Image (cartoon, rainbow, N blue to C red):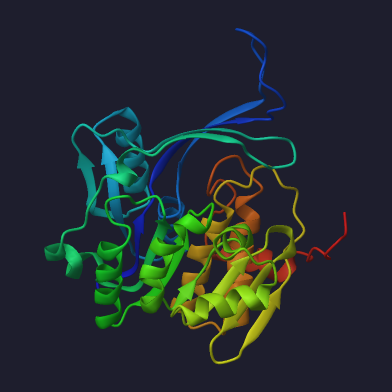
Length: 318
């Protein structure tokens, strides 16, 4: 394969402010300590974090012909991503967000879907975009033009070529389940947040939710649980719980997306499942220490040392 990692789907421009407490009345002003810009989205964050881990990466998605698209393109180029299939679309803006980050790391956001909902990968590009050891589909539920049959066909093609396939989603209710269900039969690792898994299934028990998605065709579920770590459930019966690391959280934007890239790094480097999850948790935790997706993540050596030396967060502890 030409690339280690091909990351398709949700690429967005983020403008972030910290710390946010309240919206001022009328035309008032609130002073912030920090404002930052970041490439974000389930595919965008994963691309940059994977590149920082030393993986050769390919970006697949859509941008507009606007200043936000120019900046996203420039940042991805800075990290060496191949962008032949990150298409610039006419008459569609780049997907963009204004993210207001509170002191506790939570982040209400205002989002414009833009090019994520408009781009299409035509069948004659299927070989090119799946020329990777790991093919990641990030943002199912936001890709209006690709969700459903098109994404299913592309994922089936990726599996036929021998790719390891990973899927992350943007799901808020059971109405999003059809788009997710379309790709699960071609998914090796399904990696939603626990909140998304609950929204899709109406369940809360981790085992029940994993069984639900395995029955729809996924080979393995990896649920990200925030401060409670991660839960791995393979159809071969292997179940693993990995706790989170203890860090001072600044911004949780992109933590799950950084996890995706870290997990892929572990797979590509031949780590055992638990070690791959732990490494992914390290990427996610470091991501949370800076403002904006990938801000706290530097390189493979940094994450490896962090995983080796950082205490875990005991569930229920302050």
